[in-house]
Length: 86
Image (cartoon, rainbow, N blue to C red; front, side):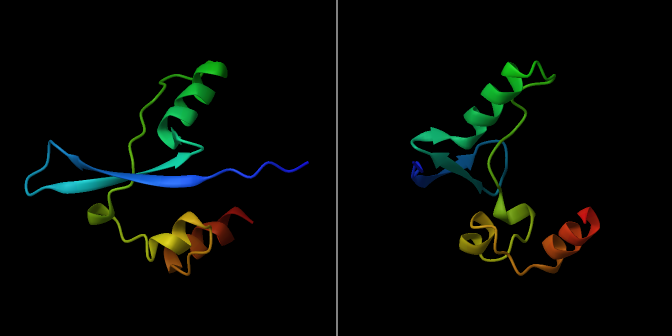
């Protein structure tokens, strides 16, 4: 039987930048994706662990975020990357 997860997002100011910038972090079933990644890295004994933050749209043009997070981005950047992986 399939499990349906929920996704939500938190937005927080990144304190070390002026003017202020904001980070977006996806949460899967209430757990920040950054924590899920860190837990996976620890379980696999990766080093370093936990070097992830959220996305900062001011630093990169992700395109429409609903499409980006849904894996449907029309951005040339992502389509070129996907083609290079084929």
